Image (cartoon, rainbow, N blue to C red; front, side, top):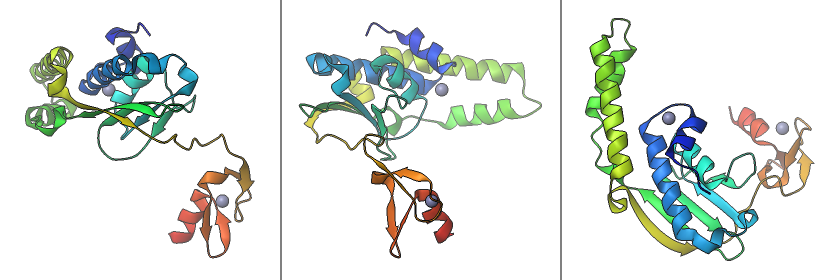
Length: 197
Ligand SMILES: [Zn+2]
Ligand SMILES: [Zn+2]
């Protein structure tokens, strides 16, 4: 792998708290998976939500949305998993750092710097707070940042590896695993949502 924090920030194109969280998560997952990552064609990353952390996960693990080996599980929580789909062996990291994180000062400063009359003092204060917190995240003991567990998971269904069929409404071809049955019709997600609206 050999990618460092700077690589993750360069890929993401800005410095923020979540890119540091994603970097630490990816480092832990890669280290804990060890030999399970020998053949990256067998590896997927499963992510529970979409935040800046994902760019670090993509850059450090090499699993990307484009390659279909980064899968959004939409759990609505910061859960990052690396899985060997052949053995099922997986490592899961839940980011517990945010559970007790005090966002008050950040929120107030972010709000302040967005105003047209924002002072350079406020901007500097936010920058300093951001940098300080990133340093804290990068140096924190792993146990303060994540709950790490090992588990065995069934191989995920990966869209795009299955045949496509036309939607009964728009006739556009859709990945079969993503077609929906409604009133005796087979519909794509767009047509299903339009019908419900
Ligand atoms: Zn970011
Ligand atoms: Zn359709």
